[in-house]
Length: 413
Ligand code: ZN
Image 1: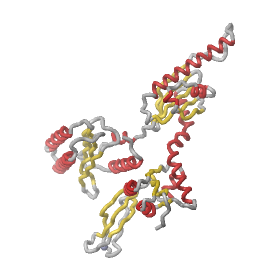
Image 2 (image 1 turned 45 degrees about the horizontal axis):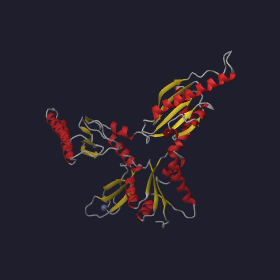
Image 3 (image 1 turned 90 degrees about the vertical axis):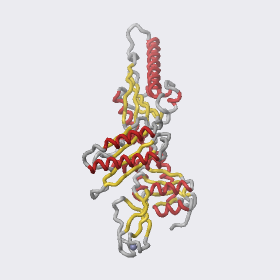
Image 4 (image 1 turned 45 degrees about the vertical axis):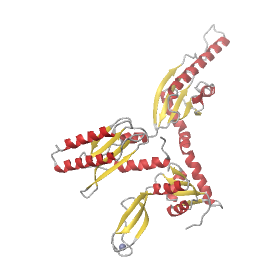
């Protein structure tokens, strides 16, 4: 299952939220249930844990652990069978501040299948397996080569993993006495060709088994004309050959050459990642200043356009941390209520403008999901835009993280 940008965003947010939750003792339960695991088996384990918890001496801890287990069991009852990727549950009495705890529980299907069953109790939730799934799996093949040696490795996320080092038997340019110049050159060319072939086969061996979806491209480094000869000579498997992105100058062709290659390709790699975001942001900027003006920004205006079905592409900054909340007066005799865009849960609510009583949140939802839902209803495309390039930062800072490219122009509100 491939995550969409929006799903990835929501998943990240969920993990952020879970990371901040703590329990008093070891009553926070994390359950990772693989798709082929029987829910009934998990239930009997929990029942057993419940029984054992009766031995806990401290009354408070005992009740709290048993409460978490009870909550876990009732949640599991709602899941007759794990979904395709399995299911993760996080349940327990979390610290709610002011010396209070509250029961928290969430169940979700992860982006990748769960392989190992885990039942984990601690004062925090076990998130590592989920974080692993979310980690950047984009992989690049790396080859550095000259006529004497070559190194093969991969770049995975931010890590370079050297895989192979090969040396050649290509003789130097200086021929030995007694050998004809022609013969010598011929032997040398054969040896070079053989070496390229060997490197190509080794690279194919390493790169071909990588999931083609993860293998984003191959970078080749070395001096000229070796790297060009290698790149154009068809020494790689044809499927890999198509993935060659660039040939770059590097001075080392051992393991350290792999690092040099990634450095040299940095701009190319970032570009590749950001190209899509950049293209769509440039389109927005262009629309903003054009006569047709098919652009909108800010929560109010974008929402207005979404409701009219006028949005073609919804642009949301990945750094956006806002919620849409329905606020009401706590005074039952007062009918004041309003919608607010809130930044951060701790932002003060203020007092009721009608009667002066305190205000409270009736309903709150992440603004990204509110707007994405509206986008889905009208068939608008949703783009979560990185802040790692100029226009992306601008979207966040100058446009409040919310913008849209429009299908047609609507009246401003
Ligand atoms: Zn009021």
